Length: 553
Image 1 (cartoon, rainbow, N blue to C red):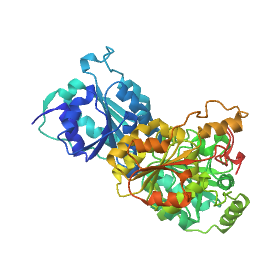
Image 2 (image 1 turned 120 degrees about the vertical axis):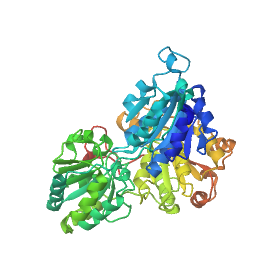
Image 3 (image 1 turned 90 degrees about the horizontal axis):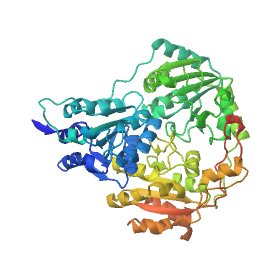
Image 4 (image 1 turned 30 degrees about the horizontal axis):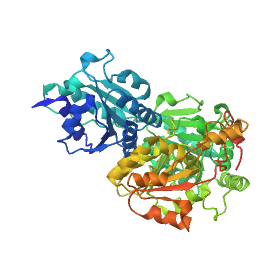
């Protein structure tokens, strides 16, 4: 059959099982959009390409499968870059299909031309500049295979306009791109790992986003419970181990609990699973768990020894490794270690606000946790509210927290919530944001209103860039600069202008009850919550300090 490059792209996406694409059309990708007109694929018209990229991330983070976003050449591509870089740092499988000026114009500074290939090399797992329509038969399936295999990540496919218009003869369709079989672990190294765990008297499991990506939460729980091993998680690992389980110590690191960080200081073995020893998790790397042996299992060889030397490293799929460990490590009850952990938790208790202080951010998070089911999906932007959620929300299932971990992108929350709702329309989705972050992609309220998705937006509004102000207070001698908003909008009125029901919690007679009811209703809603700017995220590890040197809390 004769088919154009544009229709070929769409047909190959259909064969990949893609049902939803988020994007914005422009001159250089209009042929693809014309082909989408006759496709069963549902197109979501974002209001900004960055929003489209984050919507695709919301679908990918929720399902674990590669999702697609699209943009035109020039500013369309540059607007996508932040979402692509965010996906790279958090290992999220996204395929970005971008339009490009015609091949003959590349390198001439043509209208809306940028070097997409060059710009995206540092922030993608792989990228392609398509030279002919025939190449699409190989490139599109390969893009999905690469995005989902091994350590997941974003792939960019840049398609010049003349390639989209080119007509070719297609007689045989390629198989859809499939995720590679998981990378097996060295059996001898696994045996050594088992011996290390069985010999340890004070082990701690340090679990990260790799456990979520490998869908191996069940084996993690089995290993910890059968062997009395406490579990800490990174920000990206929240939900991999259920909150409230006796073996769960919470989040470690810069804004982890003091008890968690102090317990890790006394460990004799750190079992690091799907983590990269990020600075926000380990603090000053050379001081992290100085007296412990480290067993590191990760899919990405480049992460081994990059930040922290290890006593034993295993390169392979953490899911396969955890399954073996859960099956083969001899069950044990570490009474002495459990008793010591209990005493440290008493020694370093979590300080909680009075329940009647409804507008204390920690109480707001507690109310959310009590009001929402275990399978509710929480998205956040970046700042104090993000850390309050990480510290206080009871995540019990993987893929229920969608947050920007590596890049720390303000404006992440709302479009990710939209993407999550597109992928999981039956679930309750709540975006927790701050007034500074929310303004970054506020235009996507129009997309939310248009789609009428079940997304609640909770804005913790202190008229500040809260985390910036907190650091200025603590580490810059209270020299506040460029962290306060002299003019902050009326978010409730703005949301109503987009056609979304919205409320200011301070105007409600019973704020706590109102918040519970609002979270339980179906449909989109924006809730503005004024909070005092004096609220801080504590405890906190100061920059360039060891985790044991926490302040506050």
